[in-house]
Image (tube, rainbow, N blue to C red; front, side):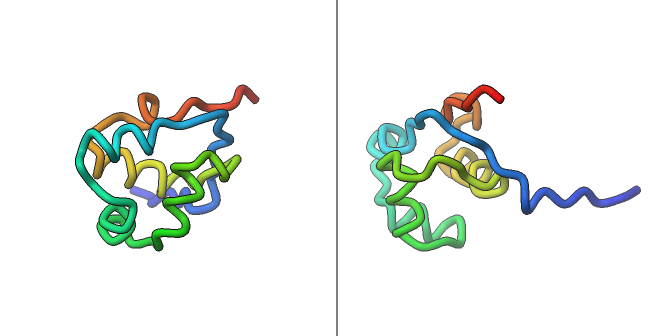
Length: 79
């Protein structure tokens, strides 16, 4: 069995619902950042629609922590 690395994979996003799901979960950006191993500034850029792309591993970790699917959290830009 081979291991597939997806570190460089990026999702081009039109918009996301990170801020809404954070509010519903009563979770701060700092708490989410701590849980997924990034910094609050990175989460802030994503939540405030300042990031046009996001790495697939980060998108998956955010979705997992917020207990939603990546598809429900991010609206992907058509290629």
